[in-house]
Image (cartoon, rainbow, N blue to C red; front, side, top):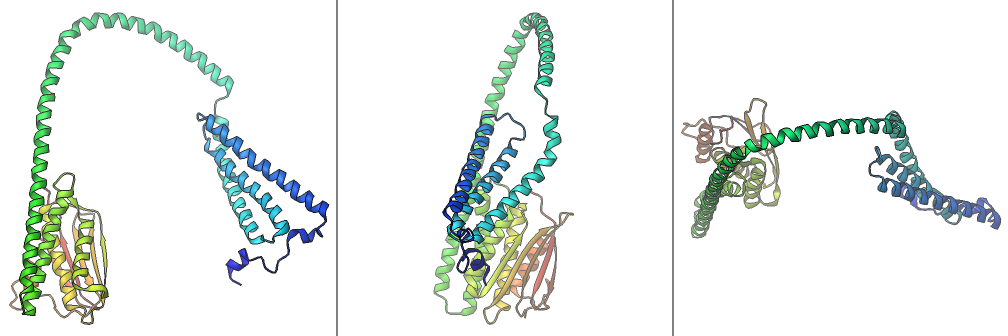
Amino acid sequence: MAIWDWLFNPSGLTAHGFCLSWAPGLVALHAGADAVTGLAYFSIPLALASFVAQRRDLQYGWVAYLFVAFILACGTTHLMAIFTLWVPAYGVEGLIKLLTALLSIATAALLWPLIPKLVAVPSAGQLRVLNDQLLATVDEQTRTAALLRDSEAKIRSSNVELERRVAERTAELTAANTQLNEALAQRDLLLREVYHRVKNNLQIIDGLLVMQSGGLKDPDAKRALSSLRGRVFALGLVHHQLMESEDLKTFDVAPFLRELSTNIVEGAAGQGVRLSVQAVPLDVGLDFAVPLGLLVTELVSNSIKHAFPDGKGAIEVVLRQGEDGVVTLIVSDDGQGTTPFKPPKSPKATFGMSIINGLVAQMKGAISVTTDKGTRTEVRVAPAPVS
């Protein structure tokens, strides 16, 4: 029997009234007693909640809400007992009793540790003693305040000139600060405009590449233009992120890598290649983001080109930062890699691999490639300082 039927299908069970032989007196006695008890249980939480709501100064008032939940659950069990007199819904009744048990255990577990704290709350008598001491202190402070007022009257006359000078200086600083804020706002506006125009220009270049690609017949030329479009998209995405950032200098590279990798896979691989991007939050600047974006573009594109002859597989992009500040980029796939790593000056190095080696050198990093059960490229670089 499925647990759903066991809990919620009462077929084959006998209502509780059958155990009472459907004696009208017994049925009425049980139903009436449970109804009165249930209603009383439901009225007590309302009273407790009203009391706590009106006495917001109570310490540990939240305990009352545990009692409210517990008592409501108890009341529900009594109302459920009335229901099961005629309907054998014992699974539902058991679940309500289990909830009541859990609430009662939680209430008891939280109440016992609170008892010492509740006992430590000052009583009314203790508060009266403290109030008398406070009144005596206030009287003493009143006398002291009178003496201070006399002293302040003597000092105030000597402060008039000082306040005038402070006011003049404050006005000067306010005007200078206003000018500075206006200059900063103008600078931010210009920077955002620059980033926006660069992004738009890159989009125009991308459109031109699309038009040029449409007139080409050579598959290699089309692939070359497609790779170039990926690099242009990476550059445009960097400027878009900077344009949307608060300080116009840095942005979180994690969502940037996710959007960049997703665009490459969806544009070139289709539905057969799965993508996973795991990047830690890391604020980077333009000089670090551009080579990193181009590097990810080349590595993910290489996996799509060479790893999956049947068009199916998985690509994973990982970016993490160690305690020493070194940033590690890992791009791996589970396909059959056919392009082993070539040194930067190797005559057999492809154009894409030359770009990868050049980007790693620009970032002053180190690269390693393994081709066991797929291709795994790991690049370690130190984060570039943000100017």
